[in-house]
Image: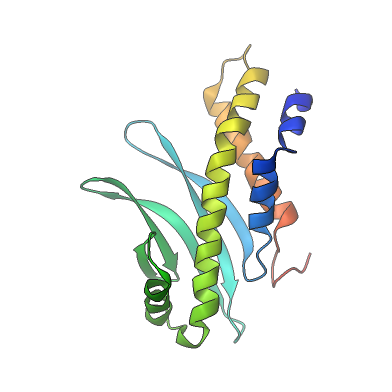
Length: 168
């Protein structure tokens, strides 16, 4: 079971995901699924941004329901905005979160979270396929999804900073 999955961890896409998790202004990166009505599962990312004053602020990328279908959004604390914002829109989001003096760092943290989500989404399909190959006799798609999510979270934990900016 381990051979195919272990080989997959050395792919370029997985290495790019690991590199995206190594953001110095984020800690405690976690990924989870958001299930849609049609059975599709979308990845959401949450992390912690530590402000210069020592305050821990939740940041992340999540999916919300809208009339036209699922909509991606980024958030800082309780402030939220659509995920496709340019840099000046992320600065306004930092203002709404009460972090105007750190707007540049908050904007880069949000861009990093978006990057982590996109890299993880690219890796998820391939890892899930490897787990499905291994679990073919059991035929458990749900188990393959959970193993894939667990693997992504393990990689984010192992290679990303934890706690207060990189303390193990």
